[in-house]
Image 1 (tube, one colour):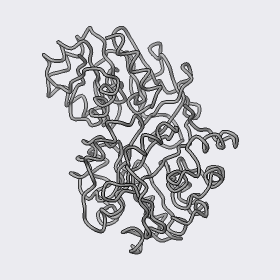
Image 2 (image 1 turned 120 degrees about the vertical axis):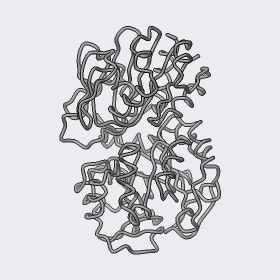
Image 3 (image 1 turned 90 degrees about the vertical axis):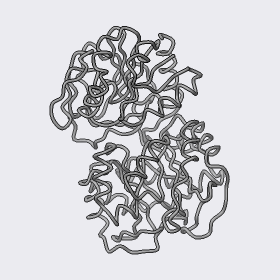
Length: 248
Length: 185
């Protein structure tokens, strides 16, 4: 039976992990590779590196960081932030990323999803979608696109996305819990895996999103980064709640 | 020395990284001489069946692999092309080292089959990412369940072993499985 995944997400700026509260107040919490390795030990199922400054400062993702992480991790690594072209995809994958996530660039050029999917396989094409209500946002939530959430995610699936990373702009950074309603709607609209993101403040939030929606994975940041819980703590509670998960 | 075949299908680097972590000497190569001289060969791969076979053909490696007598390990797509035929976007001839075809997973569930699933015989979780699967037959050594579909996860015949999952991305259990294969080399 396929397991529900717990994916620590490391927001990265200038080679360091940060976690933004509503994407603004940034607090440095350390070296991404060291932290990722610690999460692997704790039984994380995957790790996401998100270069949050890349999009608006037009910086390229930090490729040497990917290389160092990929050399040391034996779980999948997804990289996002500043990926705009097929060449960016190729470079991230060549450095050892297993999946590449695109957000603003997919909205600007939806064909990038199709091209990347045809060239590298849909399994490595993750479309990150930031949304509030029915609206899709880009540029870290600063710009409304006019796209309808459900129309956009179904378009992404048709174009060849392998996975949707859905972030609720309402929940993100608040620690008030995942956006159950939005996650449920999206997970029921597509037939590819959906990762719930934004708002996780306690283990119960993760249990809720798995119990109340058909999502496949939960992205977690602050809860782990600030040491309020380990991945193992989460897995123990998931087991107790009857949610199928991987234990080492 | 292990030869990891570099045939433009992606994910070869993660296999090389895994070998390094295990302290095993390995090279990325598409030279027939180096492959023949190596003690064992790993056929990695993420991509599509037809493209993988075409790339091997261009490199002149198909007969080298068909006649290979030392330990060979196929991973994911590298496992799939060990079979006779693949039906991903057409019909393509495989290496034919193991009997059977590779077809779309017959399920109503989400595809790709992506994430951690349990090797039923070994009783451990490993990482899968694929939409096509090999026939379940006498060469299936272990399997996982996706809904009610039994997906061959480890296949083998003679010197040839294949993993549908990614041992190089499967944490400790994946490392154990790779170590076991390396011990045969």
